Image 1: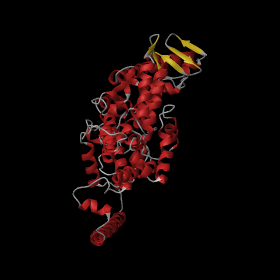
Image 2: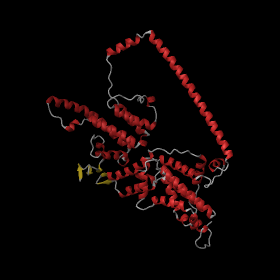
Image 3: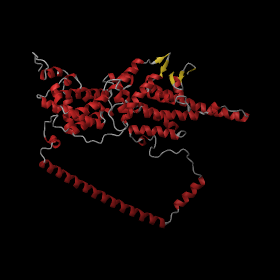
Image 4: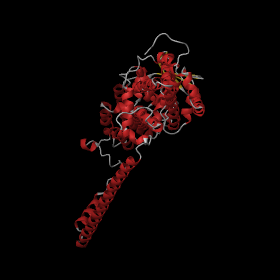
Length: 498
C-alpha cells in the first residue's frame, strides 16, 4: 500500500520511500513518527540533502520559532479555558515536546556523525544550546556531554558551562528565613567543634602520608622486579642462541623464513587493524572511496592489499630451488590458519588471492611436494573466499562473528558502487530514501566492527619495520608469471625473462 502525503512524502507499508527535505525536517520534531528509522537515515546521510551548516542553522531557526509559538499558544489556551472551550488532541502536543524531540535528534546527529562536529559546527551548537539550558536542562546536558566526549576538553575555561556538576531538573530556591537561621548557626560555632576539626585534619594528613609511603614502596618493588626480568632475559639469550624469535631483534637483516609464522600473522593484523580503525564514514559517501585524496584510509587499505600480495608472490617465485618455494608456501598456509583464528579476513583474502593466482598456481613441482594435511586445511578455508554469489560464504562468516574482526572491504565497496549507480537520487522531485537506506545499512555494518574490542597483541618493532620496508618497494613492473614459467617450464623456452 502506497500513501501520498501532500506531494511531500510517499509511504509503502509504513516505510518512507521518497520525501522532501521540509517533510524530513518536520519529522525531526514529531514525537510519534510513522517511520522512526527515516530520521536516523536523514541525519546519517544529511550530505545528500543539505550541507551541515545549512541544516543546523535551519533547525535553530525552527527551534526559535517554536519558542515564540509556545508563548502565543499559552495565551490562547487561557482564553479557551475561560470560555470553557474544548482543546483538541493536536493542540495538546505542545511546542515544548517538539523542542525536546528536536534536541534528542540533535544529540543523535552528533553520535551518528561525530567528525563533522570537530570544527565550527560544535561552536554554533554550543552557543545555541547554552541559551536554553534553564528550560531544557536534561536534553542540553546530553548534547554538551557528547560534544565534550569528542573534544575531551574542559569548557569551564571559557566560562560557558560546568561539566563536572550535572544540572538538576528542579532547582528549588531556599526560603529567606531558613538562610538567616543557617547564617546564625554558622557564625556561632563553638570552640569545641573547632578543636575537633583540627584533630580530624591532623589525622587525615597522617593517613595521606602513610598512603604516599606505601605507594612509593610499591613503585620501588616494581622497578626491582623489572630489573630482575631484564637480567633473566639476558641470561636466556646467552643460553639459547638458536631461538629464532629472539635472534630477530639481534640480527640486522631479516628474511621471511626467519620470522615465526604466528608473529608474522599477529603483526600483519595489528598493521591492518590500525588503518581500519582510522576509516571514517565520510570516506564512503558520494563515492569518495574512489579518490585517494578524499578517502586516505580506504586507499591505505587498498595499498596494503596490493603490497602484501606482491610481497608474498615475490617471496614464493624468487626462491631459486623447489624446496625453498615449498617452505615459503607452507609458511604462508600456516599463517592463514593463525589469521583465521584472529579473524583477519582482509589479510586472509590476500593469501587466498596470491596462492590462487596464475603465477603461483602453475608451479606444479612445488605444489606436489607441499604437505597434504596443510593443503586440505587450506582448501577448507579457501571455500569461504569463493567469488560465487557475491562472496556469500564470506558474508555469512563475517556476520556470524561477534568478536574483533578486520573485514574484507572489497565487497562493501562493490555494494556501495552498485547502490550509487543503480539507484537515482530523486524520484519525481523527491529524495530517494530507499537508496539512502541501503547506503546506511552498508556503512553502519562497517562502523559496527570499529566499535568492538581491540586486539590484545604486542607490537614488535623489528618485524613491523621489515614489513613496512618490504611493502614500500615497487614490484608492480615485475613479470612474475614469466619468471614462474622460466623456473618451472612445461615446455622448453627460448627466451629468458630474468
